[in-house]
Amino acid sequence: MENKNNNNKENDNCQLPIVNCQFKAQMNAEGKDVISLGIGSPDMPPSEKTIETLCQAAQDPNGHGYMPYVGIPELRQAFARWYKKWYDVDLDPQTEIQPLIGSKEGILHVTLAFVNPGDQVLVPNPGYPTYTSLSKLLGAEVVPYNLKEEDGWMPDWEQLEAMDTSRVRLMWTNYPNMPTGAQATPELYARLVDFAKKRGIVIVNDNPYSFILNDHPLSILAVPGAKDCCIEFNSMSKSHNMPGWRIGMLASNAQFVQWVLKVKSNIDSGMFRAMQLAAATALDAEQEWYDGNNANYRRRRALAEDIMHALGCTFDTAQAGMFLWGRIPDTYNNVEELTERVLHEARVFLTPGFIFGTNGARYVRISLCCKDDRLAEALRRIREKI
Image 1 (cartoon, rainbow, N blue to C red):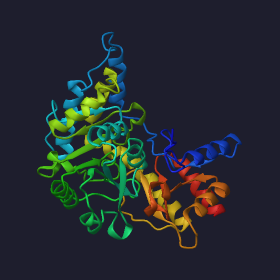
Image 2: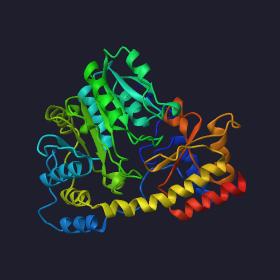
Image 3: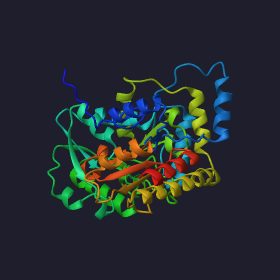
Image 4: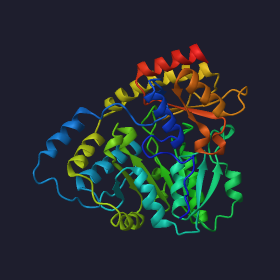
């Protein structure tokens, strides 16, 4: 059987090129204390109320059986309240919401539900590698569309309008964008919905970063008529510091949700009831909790910006999300020349932008999911060695 993996495929756990993860682990095993600024896994805990709900619900002797594929009503209703409160989007908790075991699971389920082998899928370049790797794994033809710095990392509409999209079934979008941190606008979402309707395709908007260093969370589903042609993912991993819990969701029209549910119900089972109840508690958090979480990210962001400056990289200060994306100096032949130097001389791991696509070839990404003291130490090493 053909091996479809390559060195650009991200490892499921560390979200970095597999070969580099192994090399970094080897250096740590040798006592070299590599500081990783690559992984995007929040290292802060969810709210205390969330953990208390989990502990209390886990003690229920009747709460340990199989759960429904559609999720418990309490969780679906909490997602609906969350979308109304923060995005001003009305969702029917009975028919328009599907809880997921993490949104990465949803990428698989949506692709299986909507795409046949040989169909085409539009994927952003740069973008989350799983959009590409899973599409290829399932036999779809990946068609990249450009995001470029000179366009504010927005879609190249001239390129898209000129495309033959007769075989395209899905278009993946992701804002606030990973890896670039570019933020969506209502105008962008309206244009995407219009494009989807004219071309007869489905937009899948991946929206897990909208509460991180972003004062105005947006949803593509706020556009009138968007439910007819759009699916939106959201995740509690980033917004509520719950990456290991594996709780996400998708929202769309009732028919699309049923098609996804048909696939999902043949692949996995429902989530532990106590986790769903705890997630519902987390979703009811007030503004103060998000503000406190973002205060931590702002301190870290300031350190990450100092690291970028120390490396001679340039970046957009308006970025949102839990990463900082920067362009490397022209003095380097390629991004690996910089990242390898930083790794070997300063013992700091940075994510090279090429793993997100060819348009990331001269960029690096710094994760803010690192304790303040370790970020400060990384800055000290880089200033000293680079």
